[in-house]
Image 1 (spheres, helix red, strand yellow):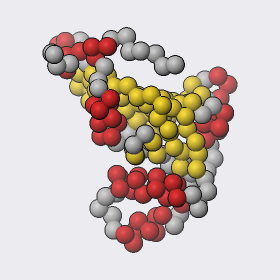
Image 2 (cartoon, one colour):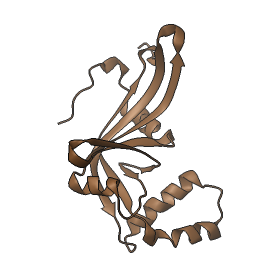
Image 3 (cartoon, helix red, strand yellow):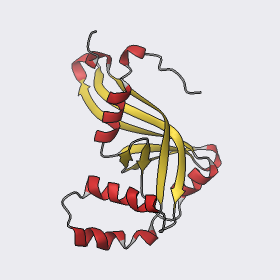
Length: 163
């Protein structure tokens, strides 16, 4: 169902692709947008196993796009070092493909879990009182969840270790 990587030598192991995904601080979520245009949006995220959690307003282009077509991809670039004298970049990236669902129900424990993961990742030193105050605002947000069906990682050929 998913294409094989053409440059197999540059493909990472599943473990390294997951490490790239876990280490990133933002990525680009690619969706089917309006009127046949693709819609790619930079976004913060948190990973838990084969799920990627995001946060969102309760309405807007992103959620409309997900409702129209739940098949999405999400790309994270972990390294992008420009090497001018070689006319290249030394990069590491991962792309997750899967289906996305939207959690709006405040009573759904997975919604709270996703928001807690995001807080753990982006606000690890914030105290419990502030976190609880922020969590009380969860009625004002949705938690889109990407269930990963396929994950690939790729590195620049210059970073591939010889085997």
